[in-house]
Length: 285
Image (cartoon, rainbow, N blue to C red):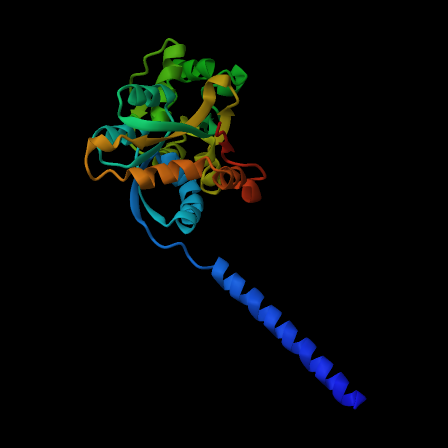
C-alpha cells in the first residue's frame, strides 16, 4: 500500500512538472510571436548612417517591434531634405542642424527630435605632407595648412551634412578652396574615403564611417576633437500635406522608436563590442 502511495505521489509530481513546463513553453512561444506587418515607410538618410552599419543594426529591431518595414534611400543630407520638401520620403534622419531648422520653419516637417551625435575627423596620409599634425587639432588651422601646401583634398561635394560642415570650416579659415589640389567627388562618405585612401589625400569624415572601414584604409586621423567637429543627428517626420502617399503613422512610429528607451540603448551599444566605445552617442531629450 505504501509503495502504491509513493508511486502515485511521484506520478502526481511528474504530471504537475510537465504541466508547468508546458505552460512556460506556451508563454515563450507567445512572446516570440512576430508583430503583424503594418506596411512600409520610406526613410531618406545620410550615407554615414548606411556606411557605418548603423541602419543594418537598428532597422531589423524596429521592424520586429513595430511591424513597420523601412525602405532606405541613403543620400547626402541636402538631398534627403529635398526629398522631404518634394514629398518623396516619409521620415528623415539627417545631420545639418541649420538646414533642419530651416526645413521645420518652412513647414516641411511636423516634428523633429535630437537622436544622437558623433564627431568629424580630418584624415590623411601617415606622411602628413601638409604638416597638419603640427596644428594641434585646431581644424581651421589644419585646413589652412592643407590649402597652403596645396596637398590633395577630397571633398564630398554633394551637399551632404559632411560637405556642409567642410564648407563651414573653410569659411572659418577664411579660405575658398580651388585648384587642382581640391577635388569635388560628388559621392558618399564610403566612396570618398576609398578615393582619399587611393590618392593618399586628406578628407573630412564622420568618425563612425572611418572606424567601420579602418581595416581597409591606410589613412590616419590627423585632426580631431575640435569643438567645431561635433556632428549631431536629428529625425524629422515629413509634413503629410506634401502628398497623400506620406505615411504619417509609420514615420512617427520610427521617430518615436529612435528616441525610445530601447532605441537609444541600441544606439549607445553600437560599435562597443568591436571598437571598445560606441560609434554614436544617444542624445534624445
